[in-house]
Length: 306
Image (cartoon, rainbow, N blue to C red; front, top):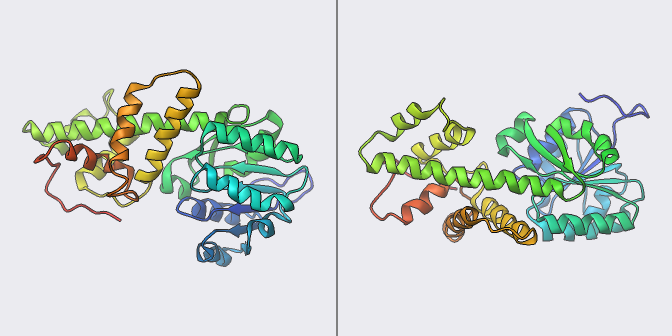
């Protein structure tokens, strides 16, 4: 359990967004002793936390009214903005809002400005590590905000993972986009490597084993390479989230005056899956690659899809 704050008690938390990632994150906070109020657009998803000791709120304003700290974990920037707008009447000067959703850098800047006008502090703190990382409390947390606000948020964030301040407000989202650029690109390359191994006559599972421990080793090769071999596309991370993140990466690059040609190719790969398997795990990059290579398929297993 985290140490109490200077008043001798843990801050009261409002957690908005009890989805695939939000539920295990909120659960860890509850089990660490934090008083927590949960809200979700689909009420049943928040209601499951009642058994862990959460108060379930009827709407965002109700959720944040008595909170010291607000955490949002929602699908995309426009949804974060809409939910915060619904909560604005109940936000008080001195409160801290931590947006742990994955949004555009420009959206984080707008949110920071809006909350600052109301005297509310803001940190953007997106995460990487998927559902397993959320359950284990091992998420990589990339935080953008002032040093003082980060110091205030850090004990709470440490309950969910490993927080690092990467710069001022909006830089957390920029760091997450850098993360997703590497993840998305590596997923696509691992899929290409395994499909090439099989198409050329090698045992793709043996090739994966052979190259592990060398310079090609990565968490992606370890976890998602095995998923591809098993054709297990049940979600941890999802295709729709990866596609959104890569599009946001390209938007940030355009704002910075950069061309990212490899990221554009990978983004196209994920976009073509949005109509057929949007909720599949991001390792379904393999399926998009197979669409480009009719008659070529990794293994002979049955696809496991949500």
